[in-house]
Every structure is written in structure tokens, then in C-alpha cells.
Image 1 (cartoon, rainbow, N blue to C red):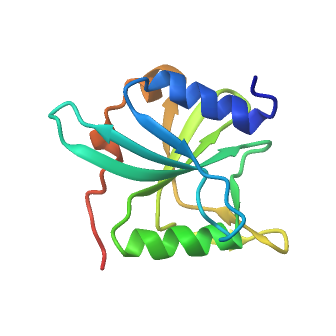
Image 2 (tube, one colour; image 1 turned 60 degrees about the horizontal axis):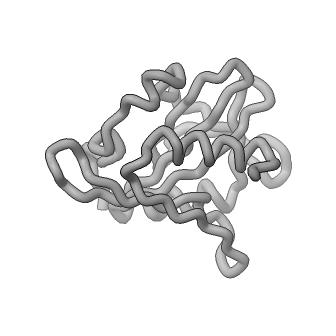
Length: 140
């Protein structure tokens, strides 16, 4: 039974996309690795894989650790599809595609994301197809 807000959010995402394969990542060997690796098929049958870092917002801003910024930036530039998905206190889902371009140093080990997110109500987020999570740009 999920106990933390992050675990509950993860379960909501898994239930919203029952045909996708989710692999929760709990690593002690690398810092900054996102929470989830996903394999899914688009409506047109194309297989896609991507990474998701989940966040629970306690305020109006979303913060990530500096190691997460470094990991997602490197992988995004190498062509991996990496997303940060945040749940706000009013149940809005915010999605950012990495690499994050604008951020501000927050607490000592965190940065505040300043990029404008895609915002979804939960119902419209659940209606997304896997093709949404395929990058339109690949910067090498």
C-alpha cells in the first residue's frame, strides 16, 4: 500500500496508463537518476521509452536536486526523452521536458525550475498518448 505522497502519485500514474510498462528506479549507485523508466506504444504502434522524475509540489514552485538537473540535462542532450512531472496542491499536473533551460539556485542543493510547464488537469493528463512523450527535438 503506497504510503508517501510520491508513492501515491506514482500509483496514480501507473493506473492512468495501464498498457504502459513502468519500472520504478531506486538506485544507490548513481545520483540524479529519475524515479521511473517507461516503455509504451503510441496509438500508431511505435514503441517509445522515456524517463520520468516525479515531484510533489508543496508550494507554487517545483524544485529538483542539482544532481537531477545534471543527469536530466546530460541525457536530454544525448537524445533521451526525460520529463519532470509534478503534482500541485490543487491536483494539477505540470510537465517539463528536459533539459531544463531556465532555473534558479534555491536551497544549497536544489534548483527551482523556471521553465514554463505544460499544465494539465488530471483528466486531460490521463488522456495523453505515449507519442506526447517523444521529443520533437534531439539536440546532440
